Length: 275
Ligand SMILES: C[S@@+](CC[C@H](N)C(=O)[O-])C[C@H]1O[C@@H](n2cnc3c(N)ncnc32)[C@H](O)[C@@H]1O
Image (cartoon, rainbow, N blue to C red; front, side, top):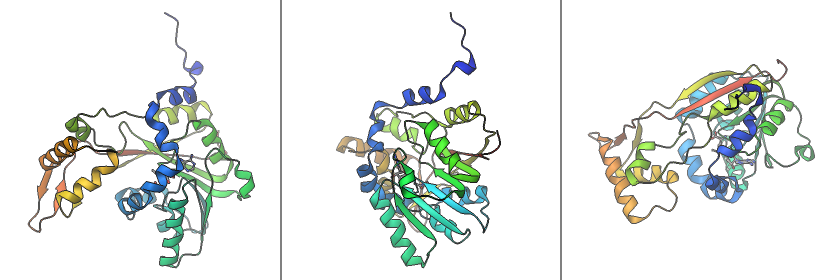
């Protein structure tokens, strides 16, 4: 048997090959456009955003580049805490929500820029920011390229979050309806790649350990819909049964879901100049 040597492992390639073939759906801006409103509703003011910002410890003088910003999950609350933010995303609808919310909240220090990870960013004449973020937006084939772009655009710090194991999905729900959960490569590939590139990355964890609360079972079902595109009638029945099995009902009729596994994100940060 040939000896496997750590330095010979190409973590970028290994990660690329570990993506399920159906993962390409998520790489299309129109699929993000369609999900933008429901994503924004689910994530605004979320436990994830609060825990992320607590770990980030933003400084008033920071300028932040937020790559794959989505509807401003982080940019909107951060805008009041830092100097300015550039939101970069390839989904027009996600960025439209950022602009709408800036108007509603009277924020004037967020700029939006519609571009993808793989396009040439130089045409946007992006200044170098103090901090570059990529929160839950590393679904790219070329992770090495993404890391080098983030590092080149930040003077002080780069922060990414990546999945741990199954990510935000609920594995027990997949089991209950009989669909296989196609796990994507998680943070351990990213960490190994950063190590090989010489960065001194630090890892912390965001555990979403709050039970999920909904006004009704129908709302809870809608809250799970993003996990299961094209749910058929039989699957919907099985999902309802599963949700009932993990739900408790409060006196006011509120439904609380108690998931067996806590969704967890890896919060990885590094100084782009320290190697
Ligand atoms: C899961 S959302 C994360 C949004 C936000 N950062 C957060 O944590 O809530 C992923 C975002 O990345 C964007 N995205 C995905 N692939 C991209 C690509 N190749 N180039 C630019 N943006 C991309 C999507 O449009 C979406 O807004």
